[in-house]
Amino acid sequence: MKTHYHYSLIAAGVCAALASFSATAEENSDKMIVTASGYSQQLRDAPASVTVITAEQLQNKPVRDLADAVKDVEGVSVVGSANKQDINIRGLSGEYTLILVDGRRQNSRESRPNGSGGFEAGFMPPVEAIERIEVIRGPMSSLYGSDAMGGVINIITKKVTNEWHGSVTTGAIIQENSESGDSMDGNFYLSGPLIKDKLGLQLYGGGDYRKEDKIPDGHDKKDNKSLTAKLTFTPMENQTFLFEAGRTTQERYAEPGKSLAEYSMFNGVKRDNTKSETHNNRNHMALTYKGDWDVIQTEVSVYQEQTKRKTKAETKDAKTGLYNYAWFGLNAPRSVPVKSSSAFAIESTNICSAGTVCGAVRNP
Image 1 (cartoon, helix red, strand yellow):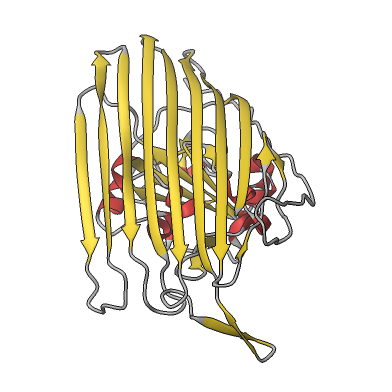
Image 2 (cartoon, helix red, strand yellow):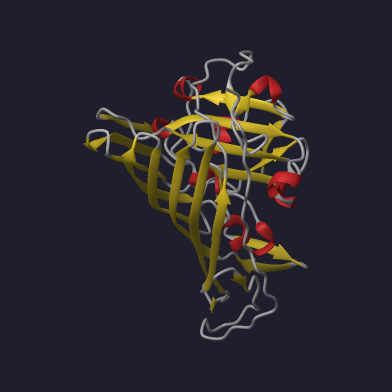
């Protein structure tokens, strides 16, 4: 068994943000965006190549994950196998594409050996909860660090509403070919006031399940679930506190004779392939204060992300395991394979933390 934990504590910041406006078409230069400079500005003034995908555009096409949402954007390519898709921007690999949700980075890649892809896209909120997606094409390292050399994708979720609103969506795909796995998914979104003009609640989540293909190199069995809750408190008209907490789980299963071939040849020797399981669990919490001081708007956030990765592999003859761990940003990304999962070895450690301070003055 291989277990990998990653804790990233990100605290800090005073971030300016002017009011967000709903976008309708990329050609409209009056759209307001926040990702290109860290504060709200008109799209035409952004110091980078920006594409905005609106909620309406997302709802008018089939979107299961982030890869589906951005694959048609100029300069963006979705690469990899059916089970490990990654998002490249302007030819740079996925490890240089930074993914944000409401300006907070998704650090799960750092919990995996070599930063392998295929999981970040599954952490996207349901379409019903998204206001827009901002795609920045080109280096943004000066603002976000080296993992934004290719670009940035920022998913902006909807604000808690002043009236109750909700939706439930479901879907299924029944394959014509019985060798391909059927799939189904469902999402929900609920938002409204608990105490009018003072206390509001937002809930969203969903699930995505697919049976394993009976085709070598086909889709693994997949079972994803997510749930997020937001609570807003507005003691005064220009002062708002937001608390957010959520959990996402992703499970993948691959079995020889199904999505894996029964055996492989190595130096002329026939070897049975390995049945494998991969579990990725992510928990996050955030506390945010927003204040409007007439000529400026401030935002202070403290947030924490915890990602745990566990893998298991076994053959007909023996079980093998790898054991890794990290504690509050201390990573042990690799171990040696052993026949007993109780043994482990640590090769290296990494520390992962980040903070942002930014601001702006609103024009009178």
